Image (cartoon, rainbow, N blue to C red; front, side, top):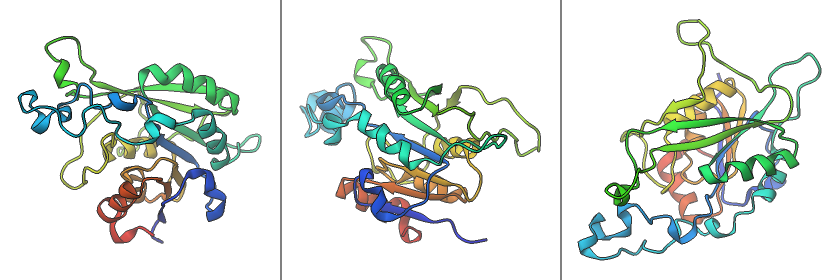
Length: 256
């Protein structure tokens, strides 16, 4: 069995044609939440050593990354539509799909923009944590302990794998446990998704040998998850800092 391809480009996904990569069965990405300088607003990172008695840190009133001000969601769907495989022929199964992690407030916008580019169908997903990053608000209000995503597809239902290790089919609910990664996976990006969560999604919507593309690769966690499952993966990251850390720490020598 050949080793899966795992390639990360330091470039914008809009330039994908330059690299002659194959079309994807699954495009999965964590898009910027467009919260700008409020990214750390309720997180302990706002203060030095997480303690407000020490004063504000260098993250106070700062965005986590530049694209959190400038991300164009319409442009994103325009290009991602071209990254995905076409719908299967009549009578065939295995349609491709996209998964977009987004803020709860972004969900209506994502649905509206996706529909303009042919993704008329969606399945909302909720991820449940047993912790919250909003620790500074814990004594003031109910804090957020969930993450959200949308499975987006054009017409036919996407490829779907629900057979467990016991060989039997199992229901897959629209909510998942959000388990933090252990020490085997480096923490690189402030909004990094757990490899275990990404693996579960990739298992459901792809088969070994399929192609997974992450247009906003960040830490490279999606590519790592795909590689460990025997899927070919390609990612794009515009930040040189995140690109280098992903290559060196998350993907290592096995990445092209």
